[in-house]
Amino acid sequence: MSGCRTHGELIGPFVLGGLEPDEVEEMRRHLAHCEACAAEAELLAGLPALLDRAQADDTVATLSPRLEEEVLDRFVRERAQAGRTRRRWPRLAVPAAAAAVVVAVVLALVLPGGGGGAYASAELWTMPAGGGAAGSADLEEVAAGTRVALRAHDLPVSRGEMFELWCVRDDGRWVNGGSFHARSDGSASAELTAAVKPGDYHVVVVTRHTAGGQPGDEVMRGKLVY
Image (cartoon, rainbow, N blue to C red; front, side, top):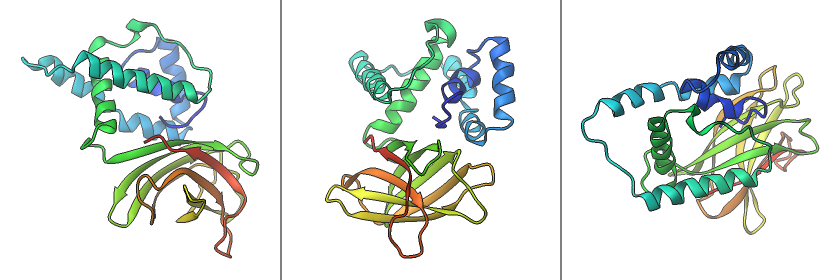
């Protein structure tokens, strides 16, 4: 998800043709000025082509019903924990074949050896110095430790201001993942690397940049879902 609180959950139905005409127009207007949602929509743009290929194949591999239920149950539980009000869509708003593709994508992310490479993710929520900022972080294990793909919007920006990413270890130690700039509209997209291994930490924090090497005021914070 893009992390956008107003339109983030509409991106999937938009890409898969599950919106009403007036909702499609509203979404297009939103994508014209929301970089986070536009990037997410571009990332998912290939799904319709995958659906076409799946429908054209004579033999389609099927998932174990039990495994599918476990994956969907986990997805529902994690989304419920976010505590946000969500719009309910009719079951038939998206074709059944699309649901199979979505399950396959979820499996690729959560099962060992999945093709996505990400081993954890977090939704980032605003802190006292955040001014309403929000975002997301997808984490991938690399030789140096962890690579973090960070996206954010509504950051409190001022001329030349920088932010820092921190991975908070279970022993309380904060590991610096590098600094990044936000765009003038408060959005940011960055890939950062922290010298910390999977399982050693469960919290990521974005702070204001300081010159002394210590964490500044907290802007966003999120708990990892492995």
